Image 1 (tube, rainbow, N blue to C red):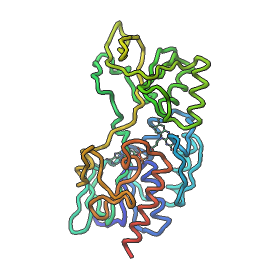
Image 2 (tube, rainbow, N blue to C red):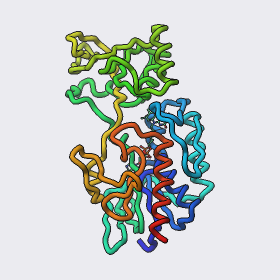
Image 3 (cartoon, helix red, strand yellow):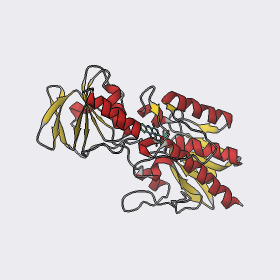
Length: 319
Ligand SMILES: Cc1cc2nc3c(=O)[nH]c(=O)nc-3n(C[C@H](O)[C@H](O)[C@H](O)COP(=O)(O)OP(=O)(O)OC[C@H]3O[C@@H](n4cnc5c(N)ncnc54)[C@H](O)[C@@H]3O)c2cc1C
């Protein structure tokens, strides 16, 4: 508790990494990155398949990078290598395996409480993403089939009948990847796949045409049941079909309780209240960055830009 950091960044994903790197480059001296898992970029490590193509313009959004981080199209591995290099080059002070539970402001200083000790800072950025709790369907998932209902590609085997649920880039990428060794159907509630970026739209079009991924569009799932060791999926048109595995790729949830424990107010929809130009919350010096600043549709490049803008705002306020 002796040091008072100029900036503590909570969450070591792209938003957090962008913020600490910009902070060091732009001249903040005492900067700390706190990450709950044993390395940075937990969402990328946990939810991206190996060798996944990483697109700078994700979900069809073209983003100009504003700061000093030169993130380009690549793969999961090249992106992680690049983030390693950024953190090494700027000799960023980091705490891994360190989960923050609460942030409090007293006498103009932030107190950051975590399972690895407490820290003090003049400014705090919260960039903990949404994938700590992936979105789940509204209907109940019976306990007997829970081990075969996934939110990423972990535990997927070969030769399985799999239904991937979702209509964004991750659902499309999961479906195409799995189709190499499984029978895959992609189920989306709308009639058209409009959310994926052009590359993924082209890819799913080709996979569907070749019959590698079967599409079930304009269709909701009403419930899941357990039947003969399989998952019975009941669709909104009254049809049912048995699958070995269901994979939901439907985004993540707002970490409401965490935000509240940091004193951040939520709007009627349960989203954090902040200034959309500066990313500062109602508490001066407390910012949010990355995916938690959106109800949906964040990306790596957008998260990196948040870090750059916030650090500039902190520097401006210091003058
Ligand atoms: C399957 C999939 C594929 C994607 N592909 C692309 C792509 O190709 N291109 C692209 O631009 N975007 C892609 N995205 C989106 C991109 O991953 C996110 O927009 C980006 O990771 C958001 O960064 P973030 O820093 O806001 O949050 P995250 O990346 O989620 O990072 C949050 C970090 O905070 C940590 N954390 C959480 N709680 C705490 C706590 N209490 N204390 C300390 N640390 C904590 C987490 O462990 C995590 O490391 C994809 C997303 C998914 C799910």
